[in-house]
Length: 301
Image (cartoon, rainbow, N blue to C red; front, side, top):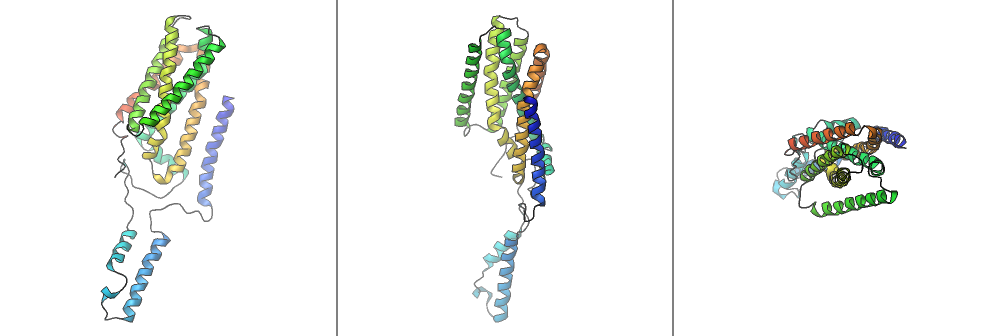
């Protein structure tokens, strides 16, 4: 089933790429551009034509008697100026480009790469834990199906509560701080996987390691879900947002599908699985700390 979903996600990625290319070739499709539009040119031409008519009717008349004042000229000149919007990384706003341009816009910027990396591996951690938790609970702790169901219910309630909390606090805390928090919780959760893998069956250490790992993972996955798209959109060109969000959807889906495959495949090699998860989370935390200042966006600029 996971392989089928992976195939479906790959098809969706190809579809998004083809759709972007077809839209650019479609007759009548005009991407948003910072250059002068026909409407702007027509307004300027109308003003110039009106002035020429006024001067031909009354060559010796005072220009101030014309219904078109100097303010119109100033406004026309302002319209003709190119938009010099500058993004946090210093790049200037450009016209809507192709799907490849959107990819370059995303992955040519180090902060965006870190956000994508952190998101992918936190989602993989979350779904891989969902895959191995029933196996751990039944084989190491000898839980019944009712106990496993209750654990997943509490897990879902925790995620819901965290979403409500982040929704309330979203206006008071920055997205980059939430991302850092998710990276910290994800790292601690992966450390819990190491403790779980090194615990003996039916021990208190295995019991508490599983509960703490699940709790920390719920907070980390919720936090990164709340801010990953927002951070990426703030650091990419507004003209590419449709394609950027499509790329993020595909990558998130692939991460969610890859996690169970990795977790179930390496369940019999729990220590290797724990080291891989911990290494990826620790690296993600270090990278988020390194680019923390660059993730700040001044929207007033």
